[in-house]
Image 1 (cartoon, rainbow, N blue to C red):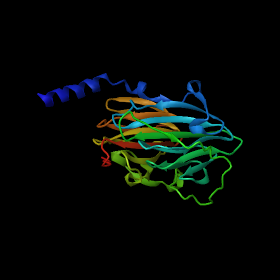
Image 2: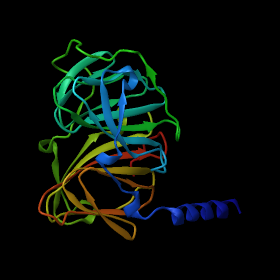
Image 3: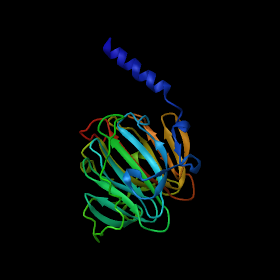
Image 4: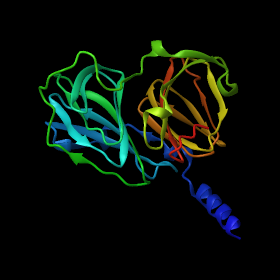
Length: 284
């Protein structure tokens, strides 16, 4: 009887799930909020919540799409119940991890492990576009401890003393018929499961040239977020398909079959975040 109740509950959740097109979050300037002194930082930023803690079956806490204004920062802070990564999409910014700072050029990210202080500062005269991805240890729970340090005009290390991830197309490698798909796509596992302490499983970088596809796949232990870095295409989840474009964030739940197609004339570039059901970092 208990097994039957669990099965019924799963079927109820699946049947209540929103249609695919409604689950896709679109970057929309009209939905941005302006906030000042984030984590006791300098200046201000605009941001939009693309996905929140309800978006995945697993412990994704949020995906934010932000614009860090000139001479503004996300101040130095700790998280002891979550891990995150800032990804600079254009321009350059200063990353700080554990009190050491380096200026990095886009497209680049810095994984911020549990219990390690971090900050982000835009020293330039132009706005910087960024993503902030956060995965929590416990579903729907988050924390922050600010050190009241805006990390402005600090000494820089020429070579970063912390982990960095470059989403450089030159680092990608060809994969033929990925998951039974059509043609050769370009792929790289940018962040492996060993980088994080919690259930953040991986971060992948994927490029579909025009006319290529990624075949049907599903993961019993990992839910995923697809973020479209550039281009446009089509995502299939289960029996549904939907158009996707630059700035879209799409949640794919545990055990959902999904496919990708690029029927256009320009490359479709994606960042993929896998969040494991368990802390043992299942990747399948």
